[in-house]
Structures are given as structure tokens and as C-alpha cells.
Length: 329
Image (cartoon, rainbow, N blue to C red; front, side, top):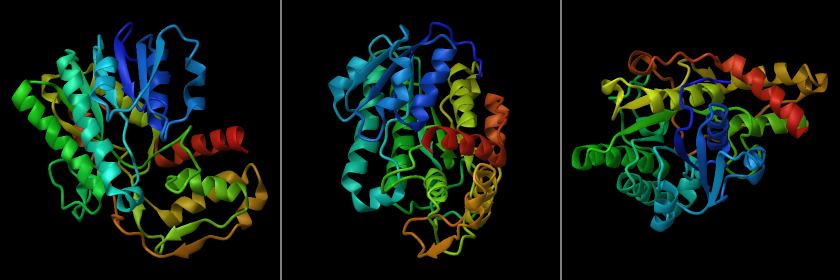
């Protein structure tokens, strides 16, 4: 449990039934907050929030952020907003850019307007490392970005621009968190747009060969969910005026190749089932819109938010593998 002084604070979590959102709801409830979850269950799952439904401090609003009136209802009387609702996945945005834009830009703007009009004190939102686009500099530093490589990346960059404009125009405070390849408990391993870690875990558990896009030397700053929860709570509670209206990398600050990732997964999973060590890995084509390498500088978050992530990629991966084995096997 991560303890932050937020007792009795009224906090709205959009996309609260999703992977990251449900973990945020859980952490806020553990900190005695009054939590409202807004979700349309297009990608979120009811099972993720079932444990919270009997908690008197938890309220579920089933609705879509593309509807302004729903956003206004959800924001009423809230002190803070954690905006997680979005359509993730680069491939999804390439296949259907219109819907990704409607949700990620139109829905985001609805939430900004509703939160501002409701007098919300602070609006913390999920930005994305995809915003770095074709920038080849490593590590990624917040004020150096390239050109977007996918419709998804464009939507997340536009959100940052809207947040900046709302500060200048309406004096409305926001903080954007650029997530780097988040993984951990409750991340869905199924579906066409499943993230790589849960997808590979399920394939290994079923003795199926995971397929790595490209040669396996692309690298990512894989970030365990508890680090992300910590960042969100710090962003909510920071009293440092310089920390407001900023963008922060949300990561651990290490990179792992996909080839190394599958070896770690095989090692950790074979502790539960030795036969998994024999499963072969296959290679496919490179995927459109993929960034070759991703590594975050977390110096800014350390300096302004006192961010001190406790879970390295390997430590978090052991936790995630154990959770999947115990919950999905």
C-alpha cells in the first residue's frame, strides 16, 4: 500500500475500471478518499472494480467521456480528477484513427471543460511516451520531442497542448504524466491490442510461442504499476507551485530489449512450470508506428515531485508474473 495524505478528498477517476484506473481507485480507497469512477466499459472491466462496489466511499458512473453532460455529472463536487480514460494502442489508432481522436481528444476536452466549470482544484491526466515520436535522443527529456509516428501519438500530444491553453486562458491547473510502457496486475492479456507483457505471459503459460515484432532489439522503459500509482498520488498532493502545469515522464529510468524481456519471462514463469523454459520464441515483421527505443529521464519528477520509484523492471516483472499465475492460470 502507498500512503499519501488524502483522507476524505473527493476524487474522480475516469477510466477507473481499466488497468491503471482500477489500481488508482484501489490506492485512493486505501488512503480513505471518496472515489468516483467513470467508465463506459469499452476497454475497462467490471471485474476490476467489483471489490470496491460495496465500499461506501466508492461510486460508479457508467458513461462515456464523449458526452459532455456525463462529464459534468461526474465532475460535480469533485476536488481532483485523475483522467485515465482513453483508447490506447498505436495499432488501434492506425486501424481506426477517427474513434481514437474522438475519445482521446474530444473526450479529453469535454473533461477539461467539465472539470474547470465544476471548480476542480487539480486535473492530473495520462499523457504518453509516444509523444516523443521520431526523436532519437536518449534518455527522453520532457522538453525535447520529435514528430508523432501514429494517430495515437498525435492525440496524446494534442491533449498536452489543450492542457497548456487551459492554464493560460482559464488559469486551470493540470499535470500530465507521460506513461512509459506500464505493466502489472489487472492488465488485460487478451484481445487484438493487448500489451506485450500480459500477452507474452499468457502465451508462455499456454506453451504458445510469442512473436516478437522485428529482431527483438527494440527497447522499452517498462514501468511497474506501483510506480505509476505513486506518481499520480504525488501529482495530486504536491504543494510545490513549480510542480504544477508540467509534464512528467512516468517510468523507472531503465530500458530492456524485447529479447531480454522474453528471457526474464521464461525464467520467472518456469519457476511455476519448468516446461515453459522450453517454449520457443518467434520473430515477425516490424510494426508500423513503433518507436525503436524508449528510455525516460526521471530527473524532473524526482526534483519537483520527490518521485522515488521502488520497482525496477525485474522486481515489478516478478510481481506481475506471480499475479498472472495466481489469477489467470
